[in-house]
Image 1 (cartoon, rainbow, N blue to C red):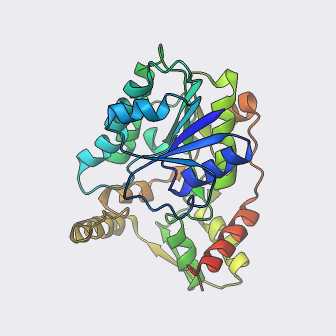
Image 2 (image 1 turned 180 degrees about the horizontal axis):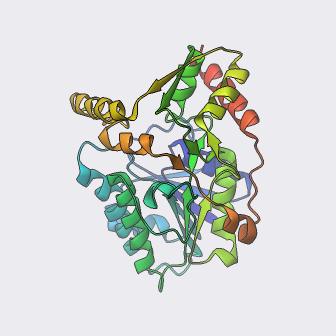
Image 3 (image 1 turned 60 degrees about the horizontal axis):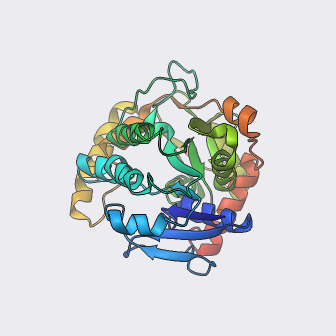
Length: 326
């Protein structure tokens, strides 16, 4: 079996490539010419350079593959249109390129809980929760899912919506670990906020289970931790692992949006857009980003194996080995 992975040079994509190889797949990685190959350059893979807007190249690159894992996407953009271009339109173009592929067993779209939105009145979201995204990123991921639905009669698909994912190579949660390491615990608001957070290795296990399970055909699955955690709990575990004492600094919600917005404005001066911007501020002030993974447990036999303490310990050790943490 041969699998093609987009976004293979990124955090989740590189872990997925490693697991597919471990499972005996031949793996082809479709990457941009400007991509940094540091996490995959020594792996026994085939690399195809291109973008998701070259229809002919996409057809050529995918004609001999059986599984496509579409991980690539835009998580930060200076312009709102950039989210829709990189998530919705790129996905639509990709689907157009592979719709006539007779070898394709499954197109696995890697989505995000952002497409659905935060928990409603404290109730974790599931696969039946109505769409209510609160950011442009979330709306673009929602529209990308809808593009997949349009091809349901010609492309066998599975959509995997991920909760917050952490682990080695991750830069998004790194700032949190870095802050705790220097003795600061940044918390938003004055009441507990909750999140489902899953280690990357468990996440790719869930992705592959969804991609290969016959019962998962043309379905959606939430993949996350079995339980939700408050940021206070995450802080306590991190402090224990680091053997650090840290001071909790609570940032009032009314200050988060201006601070995030200002950071986003300043990022205009940089080459890369900042992930922390006005819209990310909306994510941060939401009371809970929790999800119910009952469907994945029942239909895919998905059970996270890495405990929070074990996962954080492993992640911090990796950060230290890389010199990211001192």
